Length: 453
Image (cartoon, rainbow, N blue to C red; front, side, top):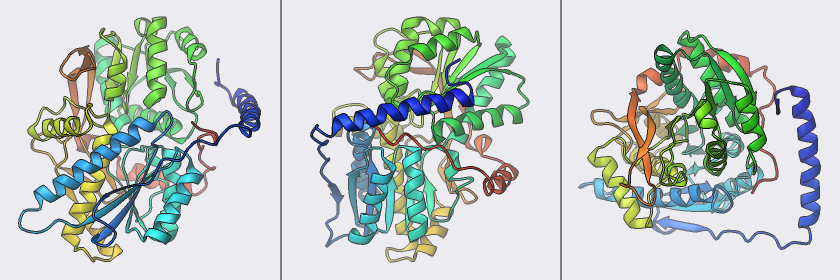
């Protein structure tokens, strides 16, 4: 089995490190990647009442998610002004730089934001490994960090600190919904065997832990047919797909995201894996870029969800957000657009409530009691911050792939929704306390490889 034992993981890591050294040596003669220019939105430095320093990947395999995040920020700044009524909205200056999905690079950017730009808020970040590095720096400096689309629940449970808040679903939320879906499915089709494949760093490992924890809490009886850990940005999944097929599992839960999941899914469908077992991705698999990649046919055997959907909920607020993004950017948004939108909206609303010159302590208290209506909220519900974890609490919808030309160029979308309310997905207080106590004696978390695209 690929990467299924600790010894094989060490050997694979050694081979990968040797390969990285060869790549670095070869790269000495190559021109360095051109840095993406700093982007500034909103108020000028002279006008701003608060400066927000955001970090997203703007180049490489995850670059689309950074670019969509910028689109979401633009919409948030416009909506804050439109919703302010008679009371002027806080004047926000938003700075954005390319973190290249690298922890050390993002830490340098964040430090520069704090020391040179005097930001009151750090914001954004797509990779959980990068977010953990920025979070440590923010805690040390006492600067608020408003996370958007990184998802490891370790940030709000084991590594909780008062300066960090997250405005998109985390792995616990997604896997709590996924576990409930699988529990209901087992009552219908009597599935028994489950296999997992996820990226070999903290996000992938925590996703698997959160899924198993939630399945166990629900009393689901199942067999683990295997677990596999490809590297981040793996170009070829064919060997892993063959191993997945050989497990003869009933369901494969995939923890890959972005271009990695797109690449995996194309190869998996080509090999017919989806005809041998159900393929589920409960956190990011339903993102628009994934659906667009599937082409004109709606493959069977896929169970997908995401942190935002363009066609759910079918509310005036969500329809407006999607239409506004399309008008602004000329394409439909991936889930990261709404995550970045939510982060800036939260900052704007917190400043408006606490006061533009409020202390950090006052802002923390305001965030802990914050409720706001966001595009992904179904009618009658507003997102809110859980004061115990600083994690936004939101509903989650899981769907099946069906033909649809409503959001071109994608020719399929998700439908046949199963929706789980936010309260059903909230981690129990005793679980939070147990994990935090255990973390004080735990080994260091697994970080992404140093060499990334």
